[in-house]
Amino acid sequence: MAKRLQVEMAHCGCASPDDASDAERRATAVDPEIKKRNLARLRRIEGQVRGLQKMVEEERWCTDVLTQVASVQEALRSVSRELMRNHLKHCASAAVQQGPEEADTVYDELVELLFKYAR
Image (cartoon, rainbow, N blue to C red):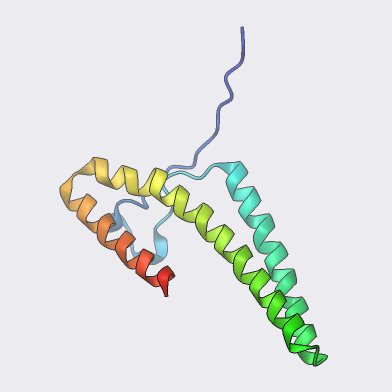
């Protein structure tokens, strides 16, 4: 008999802003593997930013610095895409299923996020 792979998800109240302040909200579900990948990416980005600081201190060629800045921005976009996907898949979906009031709240939140990232 084949074993089913179970992904342990951390459940909490991201989709219910009335239950907690913005500072206390948590994701509805987080795949531990995705969390691990995002943390690794963020650590690499942190190293890249330190490298950028060093390049600026050393007055490195502008195009070299700009190339590295673009690399950091793309790495951050990659993390953002993963977080957005998780938010849509779990947090937003849960809010929509709770009813029209919660759905309207999450729709407004998503519109604001999309416009913020479209700048």
